Length: 215
Figure 1 (cartoon, rainbow, N blue to C red):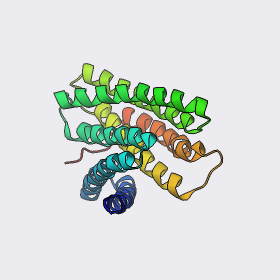
Figure 2 (figure 1 turned 60 degrees about the vertical axis):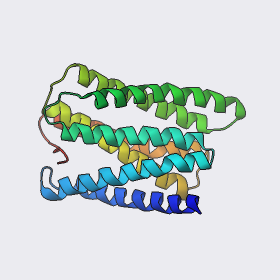
Figure 3 (figure 1 turned 135 degrees about the horizontal axis):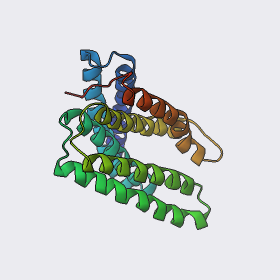
């Protein structure tokens, strides 16, 4: 019964997060609708991640557990970059980035366990582990050179929030689309949305676009 309730809450929160992400991406940056949508998105994604942890434990699903930690960091870091307008990191920012940096190798280790079993999810663990290490390294590098308000902070906010959206879209695809091999459903949203993140980051860093903080 508890598992069913958690699953319903998990799915509902994911649906809300997707709608909020679409609103945030389609509304003018810095305007009230964008900021409110960002708040709803962050709250919904936090609920998605919180419910994913017990679901992973109940289902003995290590992949889901690692992806839940991965997703929670993305949203938390994106929210922190938006809130921390001064750019100076706090201990919680350092701690979160270090945990993420350790989660990446943890994914690689579990991928190495899955590989000899013939479980294709080792590909998921390998790719997500690389993303975890790359994003945490970029965030740690930003923290070391802070304070750096402006475009750099906005770019970190944008990258993490959109990466969190990838995690949500991935969950929807995995549940609803049957792919062969199975790992393709886990990787496809990353392959499709990552170029958008790179393009938008270039615009932000060149001063052609801006993404506000979530207030």
